[in-house]
Image 1: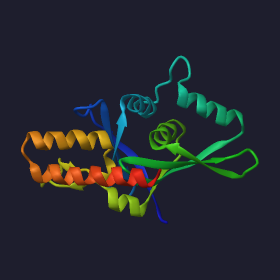
Image 2: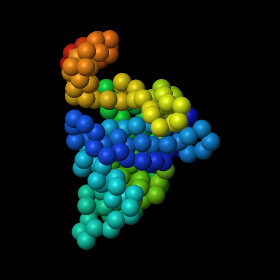
Image 3: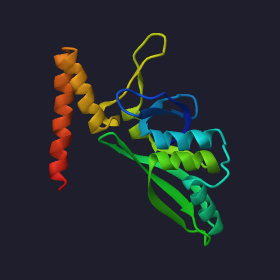
Image 4: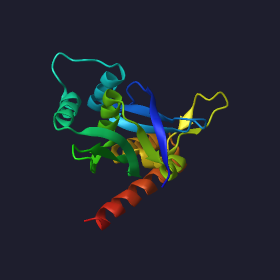
Length: 191
């Protein structure tokens, strides 16, 4: 699968009704396709610290991890987003061991981004995921985008359905209900 390099573009303020942030990644190169990840406040803080090159008086968790990797003679090579399922992005972290072998470690995407910003290794996404999950511009001035339903977690879907019912947008509420049922059925199948 083709890997597309991404960079951090922006992070939103708090999204309502939860304590979440929308982190936007942008394709490096000419096309500039974008992905939005919904992350928590702690993850947003760690990513922002990496973006600002903030050096805390004592090492935070991502700084500690990079220190351990370095002390072990290892090096982070790249991160790659390999799947999106039910609003959760899945990533691998590629680490070169001291003996030259490369290990592939499953990691939270927010952790890979936080490490990438601190250590300077590239972040990639498989092209089929980028094409499927990219933000779609829905306004003529380029200021409004729409998220794919796959990039939103169950709690957000349920809250959005409640808001749609309250606003009497029953078509949208039924679409959200169908997505929630689909995910709940998938969850039963995975037991």
